[in-house]
Length: 234
Image (cartoon, rainbow, N blue to C red; front, side):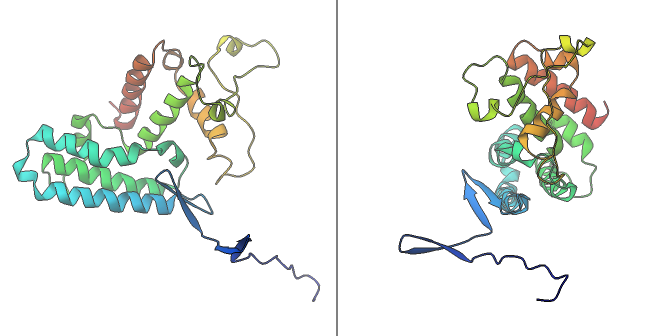
């Protein structure tokens, strides 16, 4: 072999289990979420958008028969619910994937108001009091963090990833019992997107009064108002 060349091991196309050969796949579906071997979530988002546009076309065909509130209920049930399902997994995805989802949400908002394609979307989103896609992801992740504090039945597989911050010496911030330590990561694509890094980072950036809400209901309402004002500069 010539010097300077690196020989990488070949990746098998299948694995043998007993007498069966199982072909390797670049993606797999689990609990309705499509994972790829690179964890890019692009295939999952493509599937979500395709499904959402199908529902939009169905609702659009009967929009002239529906009242405003009925249309909004259908859109929330059949379209937005798809975006909110397991959306904490979308933390840190590339901006072009976020924009892809946002385009679908914008189309859904225009459908409710029967607005034209080029009508400005922000006033419609504000009237619906909808958070944009990026803020919905933050809202879901922050809710998971909040529920980890008072709930003794919080899933162990998540609580093991969230560790209260313990300063090495007495600081003013040490009196804040509701912040998490943030682990070091080696990569931006997977390390910074991991729940153990992204969740504490998002949580610690929230204002102190929000992190110290007493009930889940108050927390959700206060957090949504905060994210709404931040998203639309109101």
